[in-house]
Image 1 (spheres, rainbow, N blue to C red):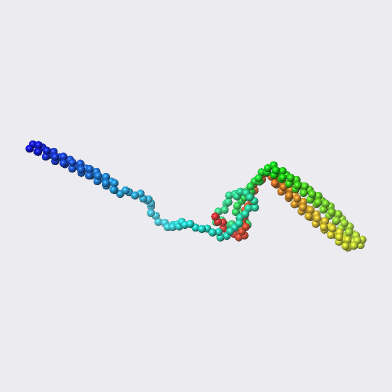
Image 2 (image 1 turned 45 degrees about the horizontal axis):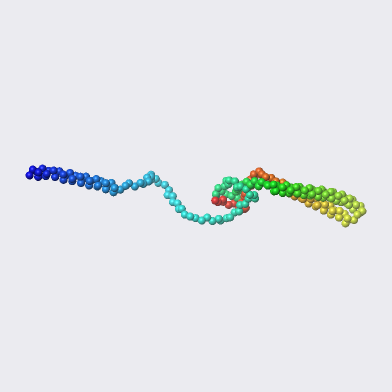
Length: 224
C-alpha cells in the first residue's frame, strides 16, 4: 500500500514532463515549418513617378537602297586622309572636295632598273639634241627663204621674173615657217621626254595632296 501511494505521484510527474517535451518538440517543429514556408520578399525597382512625353521605339531590320549612284575617282594612287564631311552635309559636284589623297612614295629602284632609267635619260637627251639641231636648220632655211622672197619681190616689181616664180618664193617662205613651228613643238616634246625620264630616277617624292571630286553635275546630299 505504501509503494502504491508513492508511485502514483511519481508517475503523474513523469507523464507531465513527457507531455511538456512533446509539446516543446512540436512547437519547435511548427516554428521551423513556419520559417520554411514563410514567403520571401521579392526585389523590385523603385522610381519616382513623373509626367512627361511617351517615347515609343520600334527596333526592326531594314534594307537600304541607293537612289543615285555617284562615281568618285582619284587621278593617283595613295593614302586617303581623314574625311571631314558628315552624313547629311550638302555636296556640290565639281566644287566640294570629298577626300584628299596623299600620293604614295615611288618604289626604290634596283641596280638594273636604275641602269635602264639612266639609259632612258641619255636617250631622251640625245633626242632633244637632235631635234634642236633640226630646229636650227629649219630656222636657217626660213631665213634663206625670207631673203629670196625679198629679192623676188624687188625683181617682180621690175619685171625681171615672172609672177609664178614670185609665188613659188612665197610658198617656200610659208613652208619654212611651218617647218620651224613644227621643230619648236618637237623641241618642247623632247624636253618633256627628258623630264619624264629624269623623274623615273627619283627614289623619294615629296607628298602632295590631290583633291578627289565627284563627277556629278548637280548638288546632292552625302549619305553614310
